[in-house]
Image (cartoon, rainbow, N blue to C red; front, side, top):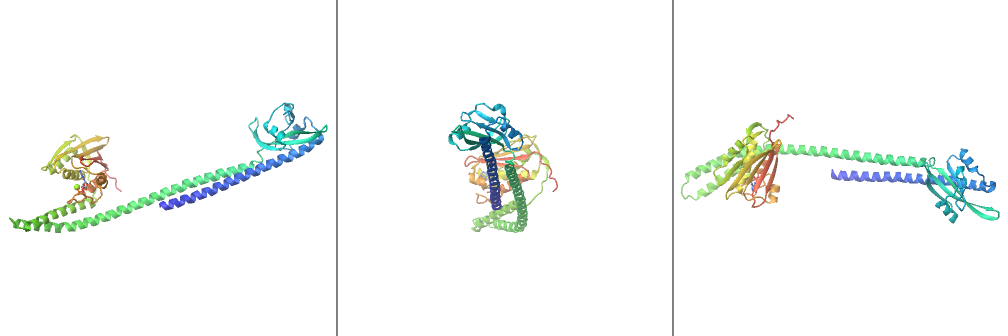
Length: 421
Ligand code: ADP
Ligand code: MG
């Protein structure tokens, strides 16, 4: 999937590149063509006017009439300057005789070469301007004047406008293409993920079923072996050397029984059974089951805390946590269980003064079969995690070696009944 996304993105990039380049190219070409057209038209006019002015002389209303006749539709204005910058002729007669030092005109006087450029008129219109030198003899002297031809760019720029439109359009189209492609990738990715999750869930369910069957089959023989070993143990009193072996057999059987029980518990997919109960009473019940060892217990839970949840599952969670804590406090210590509310949720804390955990152990603690104990099954915390998930809760660990461990469990105070489906 990742690779496909990379390929599609590369393809899209190449396509976008080609599209934009070609549109930009068209735009540039059409710009050049438009400029060429303007230049040709202006130069043609300049040559014509050069000839006319040279032969007919200067007449005041000549330019005005030319422009207003409508024959030269593209012309914005015409003007003629002498070296001093005085306007000799202008299509706007009112400007004749004024003096204006224009840098372009000055440059044409200096170099004798025509210059073209753009200029913004008082009306805000941008026009194309050709400043063209005219040479002729007057009273035996060679004189130079500069003819300015200003053309409307509108007609010539039509093709440029089309090219610009095409550029915008292709940019827009590629943008839409990008968005659509990524939406598609997103949805395909999501459906693949969902399919995988479903397959994983089915696999786990199957595995659970197998484990359950296996555990069930193993349970009875273990029971018999343990029973007979205990019987033999009772028969051999005193210093019989076989007693030690029999004792080991019984202990190993007990360990196996626990493993089978945990495995069954972990593998079985049990539905939630909701009831309302007092959290404090539940905790005290769990403590009663574990009293007698070297652990002191303290409880800090308001008696008014009534939960609606699965009592058995919560009890299993507490028992597993307490078991671990007591195993971590072999030398004795205090186990504190407290609860407080946060909005519609309850935060339950189980805090021990045991040996604590390294970050590596904390990272792996919920993995099934992860254990650091020679007699451990490694299923206790995996079961806790599974049950907390079922109760729609979250679990966090705060621990460091030698500093004890605190488990934070946050669960909803009132678990809603699952909707069917
Ligand atoms: P088991 O108890 O059979 O080893 P668990 O899943 O209950 O398996 O725990 C996994 C591991 O997490 C334990 O072996 C232990 O190293 C660590 N652990 C769990 N709870 C505690 C605790 N309260 N203090 C220190 N270590 C703990
Ligand atoms: Mg355990």
